[in-house]
Length: 108
Image (cartoon, rainbow, N blue to C red):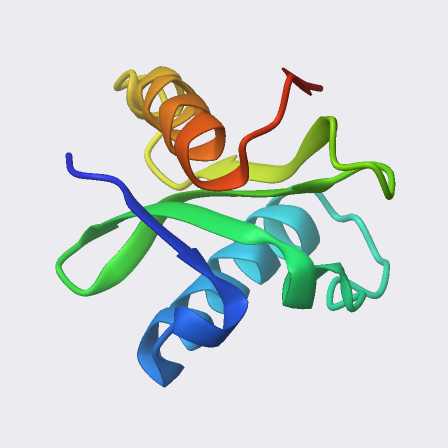
């Protein structure tokens, strides 16, 4: 799968909707975690995801952990298709995109 990596203001309306839908499906419905998912960090994040049949099937976001922009934190990691290696592919491709687009020295 080819990775899509975009800043918040580059996302299309459909991409944003599919990202939020996938996050709700995994974190709220599957894992029964109840919290405010939309936390304003999305505005400053790089959103990395795979799309299949116009649906987000794997996703993560990356954002600077501190103001000096040396460390990037990776969070909201999910895959909708388990046991197929998509999570590994997402991480490997996303780390390359994070290094390229965010210029950090370290990621956590």
